[in-house]
Image (cartoon, rainbow over all chains, first blue to last red; front, top):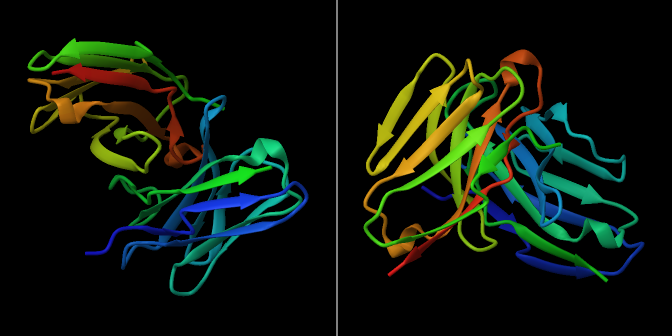
Length: 114
Length: 113
């Protein structure tokens, strides 16, 4: 079966712009989570969606937002980009929340803010 | 915030040797998972151990969990060059209202052919 698909793979934006990243989960998976990975902070949880509802949110400013569609695909948006937003953004899907199935990650979107 | 620390931060061993990585965490957990990441790519789920389990095996992988010490270890036996990667532990405290999948700092494993 197809894995988790993230688009685009690479992105270069300038400070102040906004960006939208996309994630298509594994078919049948209803939970989508987003993580930011940087050399300094490591892997940080952004938010998690289940059946179009945001269930958990990490400690990130309001510039970071997301949504999930009825087909479980998810997007995250970062507005007013800062240099510190340069990171690898990873999406993960799971069958459900609170269930011990593990998560399947996509290959990530590498965002560079210049 | 990082849930835990991994030890060592980096490990280099000869091919064929065993590699052991340790993970400590801070809060109550539902389960603990180990992931592998190859050079800036996505994470690959390796193994999941529930809070009521003490040991689990999957192929050349062996994971232990000690909830009283809030620690876990990952053993890779008979290492191969393809095992070169970063390894992360992640705790899932979702049953306790905590954020999903809090990752450790990772261990960079290098297998020398």
